Every structure is written in C-alpha cells, then in structure tokens.
Image (cartoon, rainbow, N blue to C red; front, side, top):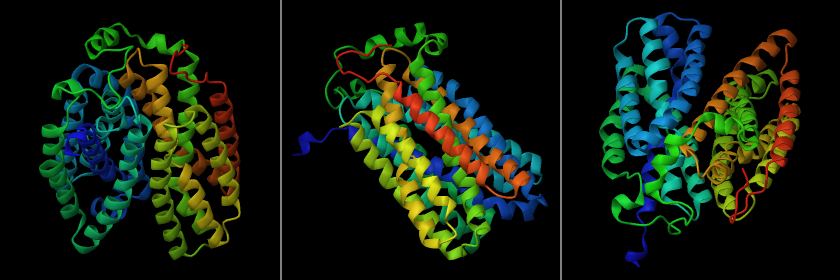
Length: 413
C-alpha cells in the first residue's frame, strides 16, 4: 500500500502550508489596525491606506510573478516570497515612523504575498496533477480559508496576551524557521525532478521539455485576442469586488448598521469562514466531475441571490443563513476558474495567465472596498452598493455562459 502513495500529495500539502502561513499573515491585517493607530498616532484612514496600497502592489505584481514562475519555477518563487514576508513582517516590530510601516508592509510584505499566491500554486498543481486537478486546486485554495481561521484569531489573541510587536516577531519567525525550510527543501517543480510521472500520467499533448520554448514564444497579445481571456478575467474581477472587497471590508459595518448584536456578527463571520473552506473543497471535487463553466454560472447566480438575503439581515438568524450561503460560494469560484485556465491555455504560459487573473481579482477587491464606502457616504446605506453587486454578478454569469465548453479531446481557442 505504501508504494501507491504519490509524492504529488506531499507537494500539495507543502503548497497548502505555504499559502496558509503567508496568506494568513496577510489576512491578519485587521488585527493590527488599532495597535498601529495607538503606536504611531495615525487615524483610521491612514492605516486603511496601507491596506489599499497593499492591494495595488499585490495586484500589479501578479503578471510579473507569473513570468518569474515560468522562468525560475514555483519552488524558488514560493521559497523566496515566504522568506521576504518573514523578514519584512518581523522588521515591522522595529519601525519608529509610519512611512517605514508603509514601505515594509504595503510594499515588501505585499510583494512577498504576491509571490506566495495561487499563481505559483496553480503551476505546481498543473505540473503534478493531470487527474484530480480540480480537487488539488480546491485544497490549495483552502489554504486561504485555513489561514484566515487560524492566524487571524491567533494574532488577535497574541496581541491581547503580549503586544503587537511580539506578535509580528512570532509570525516572522514561524515563516522563517518553519515554513521557509519546508518549502525550499521539499517542494519540487516537476515530477521528473523525482523521476516520476504526474498523477494521471503524462499528458500526450505536452511534454515538460517543450514548455520553456512555448513560454518564450508566448505573447500577452495572444491572450488579449482570445475571448476566453476576457470572459474569465472580467467575472473574476467581479468575484474580487463582491468577496475580498465588499464582504471582507463592509459586512461587519453593515451588520452593525442593522443593529445586529456583536455576538451574532462574530458568529456569522466565523461561520462564513468555515463554510468558505467547505465550499472551496467541494468546488474542487465537483470541478473534476462536472463542467467548470456551468459551475461558475451557478456560483455567480447563487452569490447574487445571497445578497438579497443580506438585505433582510436585521434578523440575526437571517445573517447566519446568509453567512452559510455566501460562505459556500465565496472562494469556490477559484478552483473552476483556474481549471479553465489550465484547459484553455495549456499550450501557453499558465503562470502568466493566472498572474493576470489574480491581478484582476485584486483590482476588483480594491474597488469593492472603496466604492461601497463611497456610496455609503452619499446615501447613508449600502443598498446601492448591493444592487450594483447583484447586477455585475448577473453580468458575470452571462459572460461565463458564452465561454466555450471545454472538450478533453480538443480545445478551441
């Protein structure tokens, strides 16, 4: 039985661990808002600007990270990025001025987080899994949710028990001493580095020795001319707008506006994160068995419907119901979207396309954090923002409908 165990599962675990640790540190930003306000005498807007700049740097880095992954391999990029985040977050404990915090966190931490993202992770999965790829992508994406569930409350507790400086030192040491060596020593770019074949065997249409020449000949203009590129990119930016942007930034203020008790709001956020992981894993498994295109249509429509529930969340029970429904479709769009990229662009640079995909998600996230707040300032409520979100989610479902159905025998691009 031991002989049947494939090293690809070790690769998957290491990739999952790296995303859990690095992205968990990134998602813990909110835990440091109040301590940084007190420490550096900054107002909420200035601290929020660090997050905004972080989104922009993260997003802009993604296409370049994709190119670097294609050139140097995901192992080097994930390792160096993890180390960069470790050093940068640790050094924030020794800053004395806000501008130093801006440079360390908004630039260097964000560049590291951009490298240790699903751009490199998707290339790893593509190289090691020719079967069960959707499931593997789901596991990798679950690293985001697991990091959110473990490191965000963990950071809050450490700040409460110790202080924020001790917390960033602990997080930096964890990344540097534990995660970085594991990624560097265990991760491998391709199965042939271990004298193995990927799970599912070698794809007959490709060989690993041909990939570098394909990537060198690939131009972004080739992607720009394909409707698959735009019909994946645009809905995925809407995905970022309605999840990381809208919900992660404004759900708690909206619940407070509705008069929902703090205990119920906290429970709803926890439940949303838990069902987010369930949805990610389920979508990965389902993507291997069903049409990723049809999945995305359903997910965007369900997400739009869930926002109608949120309109009536003056009742805490309805807020909990919303958290369950939205959690199931929160990050579950990622696995089928990435799977479609590996199918439509398998003859091109997967890392580069995933980089643009991630860039669109981050830009959508930045707009999703800013635009609803701006609309709230004008109208005194989130109604217009929610209606706008529902409309663009429906448009995303329509764009996805017009994607060609993938055929294993032939992909028309």
